[in-house]
Length: 328
Image: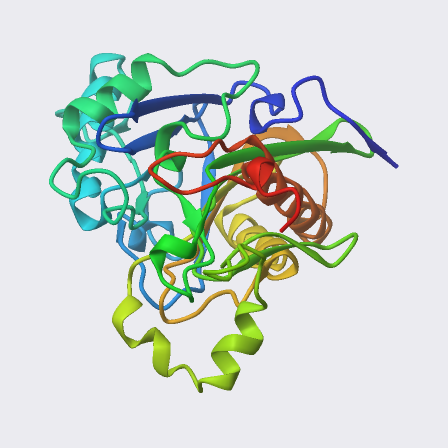
């Protein structure tokens, strides 16, 4: 049995807060998820071009057991600097791993490439990460062209000018006796987005003359991938799963692995050498549920969040959003 949630967002998981920093001049930004005390985290990287920080400590064999926040940022590798601001904000608020001489905030981070839209010389920095934390709140999550989704696009196999604008999306679901699973995604894939219910393309690469969506997977297969050589590292979809189910780091890692199925159901092609696709999974509470069930539901919720990222986006930077391509 499943149940819809008040906000249909990752913040339906109790004590999860989301904050955005958005630069509509440079068309970039970052998004932070602030976690309650005692949150465990796992991660799974499937894309071939990731940009990350502090991921090694999420291995179940490593000492640190809890995280304080997760950062998703635009700006390519430059955007990892925004994590410094997140750490500063958390330190000011007394959060972090207690070393005995100082509390060190634990902030895993991942970036996506959005330098091709807006200004390539302006990227999220420490001040941006701090501002995202200051804006963090429970309740409804702003979606679309905000935070790390500000510069997000999909469908770049016909060239960047034929892409479709996307952004941030979120969704949630309650299962069983009070177990909540939420997802947040910054959708920035090289491939197209498919609605798994109808199998129709809802965002993706567009024909230069007609503006209609192409089948990017068929196009890439027809050229044997030769058109992709100049696009390496220029994409990446980032996602965060959160649940109030009790999971250790190994269980959270399994949820992150299974949640990638939600990307596979909605993005074609996905997990390419051009994408750095990364999924984090957070466990915040004391509800009881098996990691395998949480992971299966997480895949469905993440698929919903991907579609939300498409439908919430607005045209920006000379690229149309799906809402402006009704006949595509």
